[in-house]
Every structure is written in C-alpha cells, then in structure tokens.
Image (tube, rainbow, N blue to C red):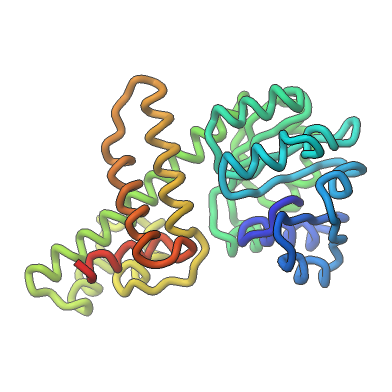
Length: 281
C-alpha cells in the first residue's frame, strides 16, 4: 500500500482486517503508525514495498504524485515483482490511467477508484470501480472480497476514471449549489435554523449530500475530502469534457469556487467548508 492519507490509511486498515499481509510506504514519514500497530510492515522505499508482493496499490493525491511514484526510476512499474498486479486507486486523469496500463502492461494493471468516504472504506460499504483486463481484475478477487460487496467493472482503465469523475462532479456541484442556496435564503432574511428546517428533509437535497448538510450550513465539517482535492477533481472532469469537444461550465465554476475555498481557509479543509465563502461575502 503506497500512500497513507485518509483514504489510503482506511484501505490499508480494511485489508489488514481481511487477513492480508500488508507492506506500507508513504512519501513523507510519520503516517504508518496505526497500520504498523495493526500488523503492517513499514518499508523505506517503493522497491522494498512492492518487490515481493502479489498486488501493489497506490492511493495518491493527483496525477503528478502518481506519475512520480509509479513511473520514475525506482517506481512501482520498474520495481514490481514478476507476475504481480499494479492497482491504482487514486483519482487521476483517464489519460494517466491509460499511460499506467501501457507502462505496466494491460494484463498487469487495474484502475480501481473508490466511491465512498474513509469511513465507508473501513466498514466495507464503499463501491469500487474496476477498469482493466478481465484476467487482471480476476486476480484481485481475494483482495476485493475483503474490501467490499460491490464492484463495478469496466473494460478499460480510463473508463473507470471517467465513471469516478462523473460521480464526483455530482457531489461537488451539489455541495456548491447547497452552499449558494443557503446564501440565497440568508439574503432573504432566513435564519440557519429556518434553512435547516426547510431544506434538511427536502426531497430536493440528494441523499449523498445529507452527510455534509450541516457542514455546508455551518462551515464546519470533519475533513475527509479536502477543498484542494475537490477542485482538482472538478478540473479533471472539465478537462475530460473538453477533450471530447464539449463545454463543461458547471464543472469549471465548481473548480473555481473550490479553489477559492482552498485559498480562503486550508486546502485540507473539507469541501463542505465552501459554505464559509458565502458567510465571508
């Protein structure tokens, strides 16, 4: 397991609970303690982490980080043991996912982005989007059985990333629209309690937004999807649309707003804190 942020840590913990032997590595030190205490083996390099494993998993922040860890000299692709499968769970561009498959070999690479919060990963409630060669995905069955009950399969790695970006955009745009709805209500004199009563159980608010409803309303939310990462994902969605000759003005607007939220607070603050922009305004 390479990359021990919130999602990588949750994924590693779930694998350990499933009885798997786990080697872990992170670019910056100090994040492996909980997993090591649960039985993982911390390693000092990518080569040490993946040189003798059946499955190497990366869960990293962006294209740049994945390209560096996977494709640089001494990276995953160069260090991967013969017969092993490389799995990237990061949210990256579909183009990079295709590049990773070409570098590792289509029969040895699976894109496996995750739908769900760290808590959903830990509990086994997350959904995994598996893109790649069918035989390679089949070799992951012991791991996948430990992770979840729901896997959606796609024949190409890039399709799994497109599915992830399409899903993320729904939530990102919904959170931003909810923050703006609260601002409209306040502008007309409604209190936060009145807005909570009005919209808290409204069928217009999608179920997926409800775990962030109070966070958007108050500007306070336990972080698990940072504003900078949300902006990055909205930007990837817009770029994918443009690559097909389509405009994506909503994705572009959401990207700008989340970039503003990251700059106004801290980039690791949760996307729900986009609501603070409307209080400051």
